Picture 1 (tube, rainbow, N blue to C red):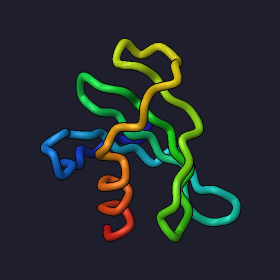
Picture 2 (spheres, rainbow, N blue to C red):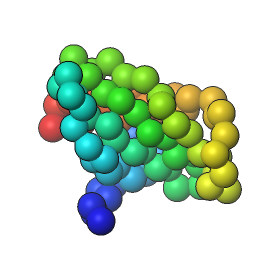
Picture 3 (cartoon, one colour):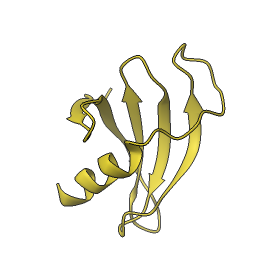
Picture 4 (cartoon, rainbow, N blue to C red):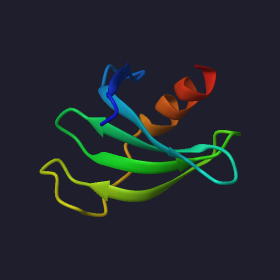
Length: 81
């Protein structure tokens, strides 16, 4: 199982990042998991555009959750890495 790394968002939120798989058109599917917060699975293009494909609430239950403010910041940090 892949190892998760921690990325700190602009507001101090620590977010676990895990690369799930590459996408056929380029880019990647990734999981972002905030401590005490939601977990999001995103499809991220090479240009940095993203779509939430699955989300879980803080209790780990599959749910539609509001997109946290830090998502764009984390995706931008991943683009620069």
